[in-house]
Amino acid sequence: MNINEILSPKATFCSLKLSSKKKILEKVSEVMAETMACPAQDVFESLFAREKLGSTALGHGIAIPHGRVEACKEPTSVLILLEEPVNYDAPDKQPVDIIFAIMVPVQADAEQLRSLAEIAKILSEAKVVSQIRHAHCNDALFEIISKAR
Image 1: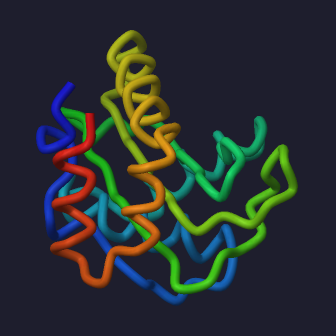
Image 2: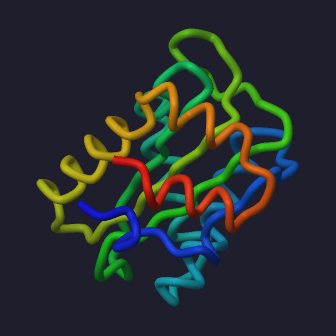
């Protein structure tokens, strides 16, 4: 999977000020809804329903919220680097500052699993995570994640 297939520069945000998991999911939903031309509430409900099953935080300050909505025809994602970490109910109890959210079509079971695995693999690389945390603008953040393998 090529990150550029599912993430665009306009869905990449550096140093956002969001104060809670709910605010993060709302922001992600707004951005994804524009891309998919569907109500942001539908996206939010999908992401929130998944979070109710268990936190999508991986630990080490990283979360990968994900879900499915009918309006989604191809995988889409949003990358956010928060200005200040927030509580995200992570298994390691660490606050989260890197969020890579992904939405896939309803019928895309295998595709979702492959996408999540690839994103988790990229975000498990200490060098990439450090570069992300030191990004100074949206374009730099997008470039870092685009070049990560």
